[in-house]
Length: 123
Image (cartoon, rainbow, N blue to C red; front, side):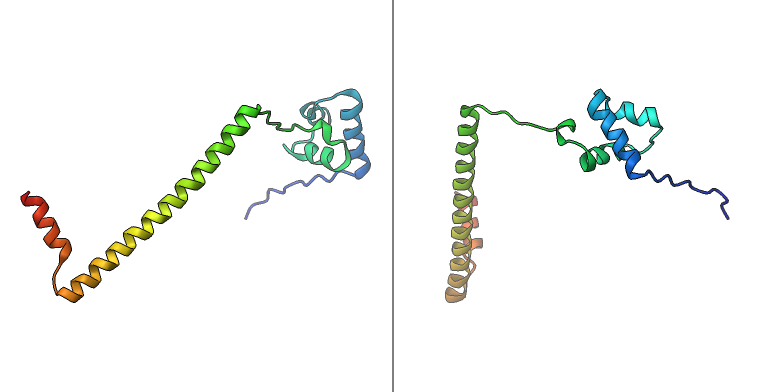
């Protein structure tokens, strides 16, 4: 049996607020604050900043697009929609033709696919 015990560190709310305040007021980086206070969790201080601090300190991803890019994206989305509709139409047409061939096979008691394949290979 293992005798290793894991130490769980719990930080008080006042300590968390103090760390966040130092980050906000001193311009301390989150990684620097973690090192200064020996906080090991990778996301621990970031969570504190989200909970107790100002959101402007967290990294944000901002996508800047020109009007041409936006127009191009709209155009591609419309084209994609049209292509999906065309694919659905052609899939339905193919299915209908397959059903038609099956019904014709039953009616004429023959295999049209096989006969059509033989003609194509002779020609």
